[in-house]
Amino acid sequence: MKRKLVATLLATAMTSSLIFGATAMAEEDISVILITMDSIDQHWVSVDAGAQKAAEELGVTYQWMAPDKKDDAQQIERVNNAIAAGADAIVIAANGPDAVTAALEEAQAEGIKIVYVDSPANLEAEATFSTDNEAAGKLAGEEMLKELEAQGITEGSIGIVNVNASTDSALKREAGFRSAFEGTDFELLETQYGEGDAAKSQDIADNYITQGVVGIFGTNEGSTVGVGNAIKGAGGGVIGVGFDKSDAILSLIEDGSLLCAMAQNPDVMGYEGVKAAVAAVKGEEIPETNVDTGVSVLNAESLAAEGETEAVTE
Image (cartoon, rainbow, N blue to C red):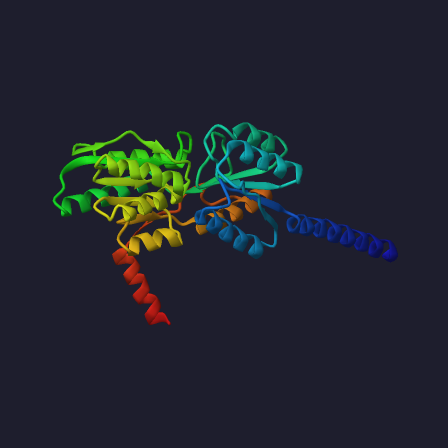
């Protein structure tokens, strides 16, 4: 009787051990794939850095599958590749709200969890980590308006260099920017699109400057670099405001070619996006499912203060 009881207890313990071992192994084998708009902008490199950090902390398999340029077909291909690779979760910044939706629906049908960073598609996901783009765009407009008024400029035309007509995040930034000038005597010109390419954006900004604008707004990293380079080439005289943080943008702010840029927190997007994706795969509750990751204003004053802080720290 005792031998039977011992055997039963031993079998139960072994079964429990196998179950728990399988669960632990499943957690270790969780695969998360990040798909951004491209692999060029420093913004996306920072998203990847944050995502990598979270993946290392959680001990999950991680891969960045980035198109080499902003292209709907390439992004859809990356989603299909992630499905074929057996991903458990896809963390994605959608080029536009509609183009990639069907591919993401296929991923969900395969049981893959979807988390958005920066820009969502028109499909319900586990969570979204992004900037409140409209509010940030309005802040950019307010910064430009404040500087124009400080220079005694109360009217004139203003140009906008956007990415394209479908990138939701950039469109919201433009809408917010335009709202800052409501009720003023400034004329906001028809938006021109440079596909986020610095050279194309510079050509557009050059044309705006030829038209005699008093200010130009760039809605993302490439647009902002193009705007700053155009103003620099023209010898100044135009207020340039933009988005994102990169070495080129910092240099253009420091030399006075750009007034400021709205700096997002892409590393936070990537870090929290992967954490949420892993939680969703494990069936755990995600504390917040729609998170504004915030912005700060980068200008000559804030960069100088940051430099002083680093000097003291060193």
